[in-house]
Image (cartoon, rainbow, N blue to C red; front, side, top):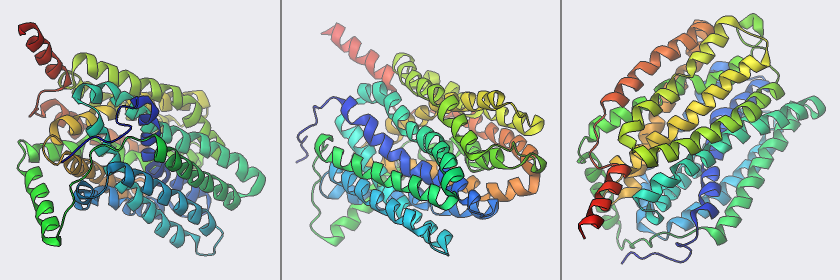
Length: 436
């Protein structure tokens, strides 16, 4: 029988920020930091965009093994073990940068990080849904989003700034060896912390035979695709971050490229400063504000606004590509707008998947299906973004990104809700209380 285990009553503030930071770190390290690292080490834009997108496949395929995590041990066990594995592999990546064929070794090891990180995501989201009720999920969704994307600020900002400073002092290879090694130390430290501070969630019901395991997997798959609006939700999730998928790999490469090539000619430290200083406060404010807005108004009334906030800031990057300003404050303004909008808009999709797609017997596995689809919608455009930016040039590429936002906005406007959102549930409980 499923039961709550010890630490389940621990205040969410003790574990939500750290566990979602640990979720964001490996994803952002591959999606963003590694692109700048490889560019500074002489790898081409096309090669960088393609391979750093391909190795993110585990975040798309994770639904295939998500049912396994429903069958064995506790969700805490999988969270902690994957954090430790990720930390160790980051240390191996740092060592691999010293080798002659560093790119092949680093890509291979980053693929292992992706596999471990995606498994960590399944267990973390399952734990969040196990321990918190629907109202608390909405209440802390802003915390979750802020912590997850704080990793984006630090990995894509502060650590890149440090890498730029170290590049000047020690050279590119030594600089990134230190930074990637620091990622490993962070993940190991968080893993040890969560060994004591993380609630365990529900205890899994053991599977006795292989056939029973296969039948459970088939039941999970059938249950997902039989949900009301299943195919509509798949299309919506694929489209929500479609434009972001094109932009995310190219923005930092665009910032780094010289003015003569259509870029902005920023140094590595400048890029870290733009994201780590200008973007940080805006992002945290956007994420936290989103959680409270959803809790107050409900997801149904705010989802389209959140989608707009996620997508419309790409106007700023198009303007930068057209006018190529050298004023770092103007560049920073575009980053601030982007990060506020990203922080505000991203949590809407996360809560939608939790409240509209995941509910049911296998909510952790079904949420993993939804997040895998989300990452597919992100990964496919990212894979070809390098080819497109080389073909179109940065100016036309960012105009294309603006065009790519239109399907996202239409999907958010028309998507139906199969279940009451958090605000509707709260109203129903208030009515029941009055009747009593």
